[in-house]
Image (cartoon, rainbow, N blue to C red; front, side):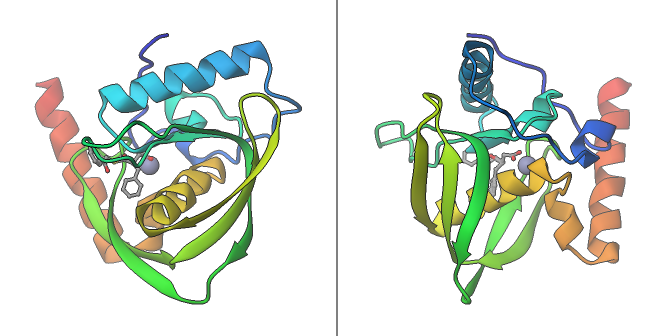
Length: 171
Ligand code: K1U
Ligand code: ZN
């Protein structure tokens, strides 16, 4: 397994609509494993393929707490097949926006259909942090990032802060 470099905004791949995969080939299964290792190393609770420069509809998630056994999820071509009318607000972060956090409102519960690493069709019912995380990662596959859910004012504030951090890191 390998730790992959994570793209930081602004980067054109983060704004790309990703292509579905025909099947999870051994190469794509390895990409999923590398993404999981990259996510655990970051650390984070989710990672989408465009964040490592691959514009394909693949994502990984593990929202288990540090005192729980790992619960890795590897998804190809995920689709939301049901969402609740009730919404919830979570403070979100993103590995492509280091040190930036903001409240985002999304459906509180979703049902997701996807292809697992063995090309088996799966469905999960997600609520709480898992529902937030899977929607955040699926947004990445559409070229949408969490700051796109904020007002222009808040979005520009975060983008300015990110530029400042990048300048400081480069100096
Ligand atoms: O997409 C990403 O960049 C991953 C992102 C996922 C996410 C976090 C919060 C709400 C929605 C989606 C992250 O993992 S940011 C890091 C983070 O949340 C975290 C890091 C260490 C421990 C626990 C959480
Ligand atoms: Zn993200």
